[in-house]
Amino acid sequence: MNISELNTRFNTQEKCIAYLEWIRWDGIPVCPYCEHSDHIVKRREGYRYLCNNCNRSFSVFIDTVFEDTNLPLRYWFQIIMLMINSKTGISSCELHRQVGVTQKTAWFNAMKVRCAMLDQAEFLEGILEMDEAYLTGKQRHPRTKIPDNEPRLSRVQSKRGRGTQKVPVVGIVSRDSGEVATKVIEKLTSRNLLAMFRQYVKEDSGRSILITDEFASYKKFDEIVEHLTIEHQKEFSRGIINTNMIEGFWSLLKNGIRGNFRVISKKYLPFYLAEYSYKYNKRKQSDYGFDEVIDNAVEDEKCMVNYKPAGDVKKICYPKKKRKE
Ligand SMILES: [Zn+2]
Image 1 (cartoon, rainbow, N blue to C red):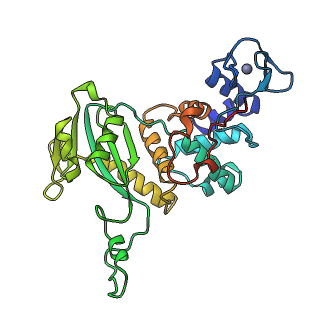
Image 2 (image 1 turned 90 degrees about the horizontal axis):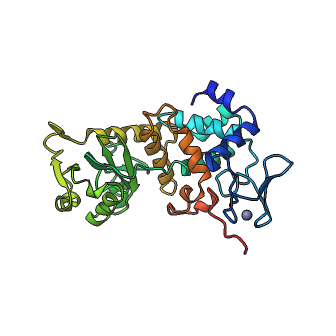
């Protein structure tokens, strides 16, 4: 999706709604309250429908990230397009300048779009690389001399890599499909790492090979998968045994965050991770995953509630509402 295509396809609200209806219902409206698709009539005014089974009126916006929005959909689509087209990320200030909405609106809407990007690679297989990175938090320049009277914590914080106070993020990338799955894992124990591995890797494939560095928590992987390690203290690559692909993703992620957002709080880190992983996974598609973002955005259960990082996500996204019986 590019600007000219977007301007021709989605220049009016009607066209945008028709597109949403096509993505969500495939042309046949389904009542979100009773889930019937028969006895539904279109109301005269605009885009609303009346369900004669439960006698309620509804529109395509119900239970989606676009519910209750006052912003015309073409602005939403512009935000989505700008977000997926910018490889290294785009800040809310930049969105405000490009689209013409306020910075606050841009921030909230971008967060909701990030929720719709929680479409991670579910089944990775083949040659896999697994590694962790440490993100967010202030970094002291390594050459800065720490005064003797400073508390110990700041000495720890200035450390890089394992043992820092930063938030650990673990990633698995498949060299075959070129897809990545990422997750914030606060404690890098074997158990947590194995749980993540089982979540994203096709277990019965039997032909997966995992490459990691020599970190002790990866030792247990020997029992479940063919596991090769590279000792980063000695060398970075030995033939095909390296973790260069996942390192490449970390560099993209870290540079993107540093260049666009400076610092991200721990609370919102999973949203940004979702965005970068999504864009990385869809980078070879012609529309960079535009249709799939919309598809996830109108599919409520996928959007947000299942994936709740620490903090009040309700303020950012719409959780599924409990309806009165
Ligand atoms: Zn109904």
